Length: 63
Image (tube, rainbow, N blue to C red; front, side, top):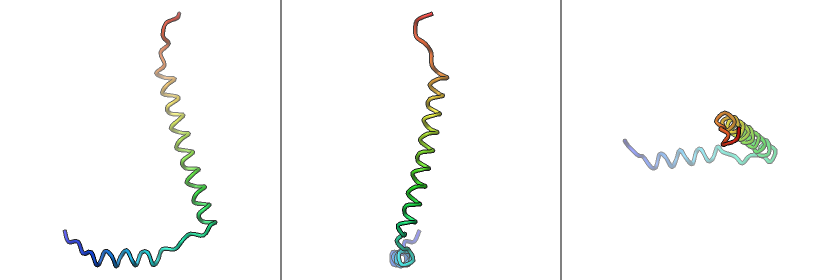
């Protein structure tokens, strides 16, 4: 496997030249979407854990 460091550096430099800082509006939209996704995944995980706890619940003692 050939590692051409100069070529990699040129590729990285070209990529960084094309990249631009997002506007505040784009950043806020992205932040909201990430927060929404995180909330959905967390809620689904909680629901699955809760259902699993209910299904495997075994009362101890008592009649």
